Length: 94
Picture 1 (tube, rainbow, N blue to C red):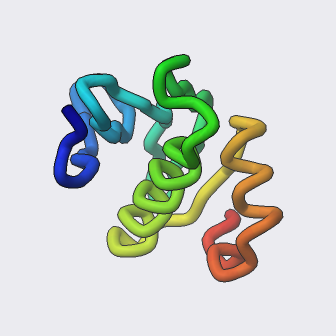
Picture 2 (picture 1 turned 45 degrees about the vertical axis):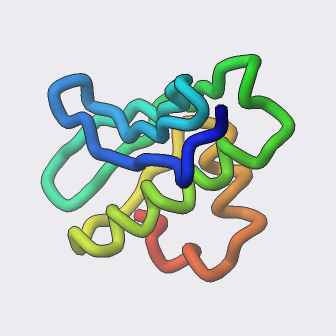
């Protein structure tokens, strides 16, 4: 059974943004410093790959970062690539 819509959250206890889809959780880990979020690693379970879930997750995470008035340091190659291919988030780079 497919969930009605993915559920996004900031799991600050684990320092990661999460997206629940179809009973699985994709996540991107981060380190928070004053004014900056450094993205470290993004992981999408094999069952969710090739469906754009990673992009949905990173988009939601970047929107959360923007809403919090923070900047981004993309140490994760997936997040760096997303920023490179989505200029609408370019202003978030630290």
